[in-house]
Length: 97
Image 1 (tube, helix red, strand yellow):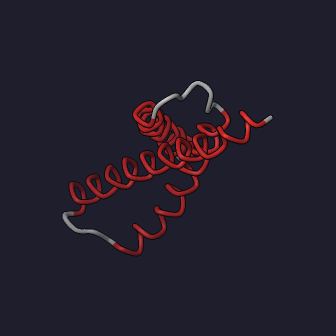
Image 2: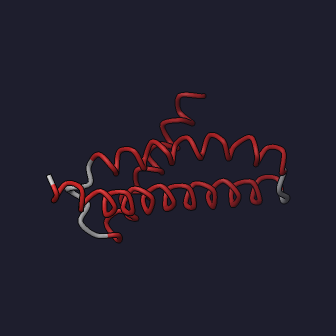
Image 3: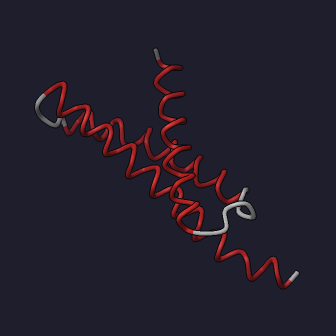
């Protein structure tokens, strides 16, 4: 039992790292795409999209928290967050199309 309680902060840190990696990567891709297509940043559309990006990143963080025993290091959590966030973003765009 005490081992589970000691691992909780580590699992939380890995989940936060995965969620932040997902959020940063998806936000960067969205802003870069907006700059390429529109040559400007539409802040109203960006704020609309940030809610969906945050939802995808929260799901990535929840999955990372549940799979905490497989994610041993922060680097693995960041890599997992970036890849899972990209897959989640692709799935969201495909479902919306």
